[in-house]
View 1: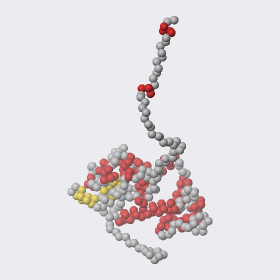
View 2: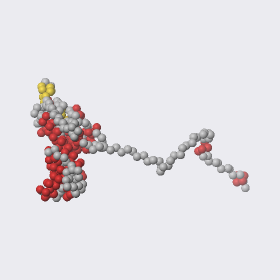
View 3: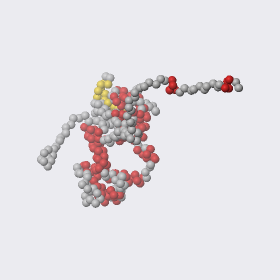
View 4: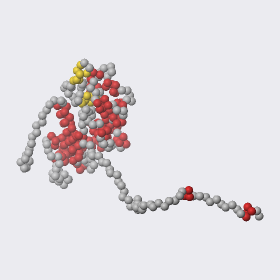
Length: 314
């Protein structure tokens, strides 16, 4: 046998990664026991809730209202729907104020409302674009007709009419805003109506039921009568003016009796206090708008009469 077979070469020991570093005696502080995931308290992020939008506090004058982007993001769709319900702010004045445009005094012309349905007029004597204001977040900003206002009346109804320049061609920002406005305005075209269409008979019944409540609320408001009763249950002998008057309408009209009160669906009776307040709010907005249109910029005064309470105090 050869020497190589008797004395084989020793195997090379493979070093580990720790062998390349020198160990130092470092005192590590005691690490506190960390509770397990099951023992830890679950953190719940606070939920941001928005208050319902009150239509009474919506400013209609385009020169005073806030931009829709300034509202909470969860409120913006409701704000748009309220403005669409009100429509463009177009006060009809006997004479609009005039100011110097170039070398002549010029004023806004109320006939422009008929020619440009999107046009709005502010009491600050400036014109605005209603659909571009509503959908300003979705399109390039049109600040002249949404924020600053237009008042160069000399450049209307001429070769370079700025109203027509604002409208632009098909596909312009204004054109898209008009399409959005019309689609939101026509409720029957909404996707939820197309997905879940209601039978025509059911729609007629709902309208008749709502019409009865609207007429009763109108009567109560006009006569300054109380709306609700102390006990509006079916067993009560006096269920309040609203319910009793709707019941009276039903006794006079068989079609009304078939769709109101106990004959109505539980989720669509249209006699709840919330519905009453919403209908009354719509009436109040219409009255305020009528007063604003009649008064215009004229001066007015308010007479306040006080009544004595049971303690003989005003």
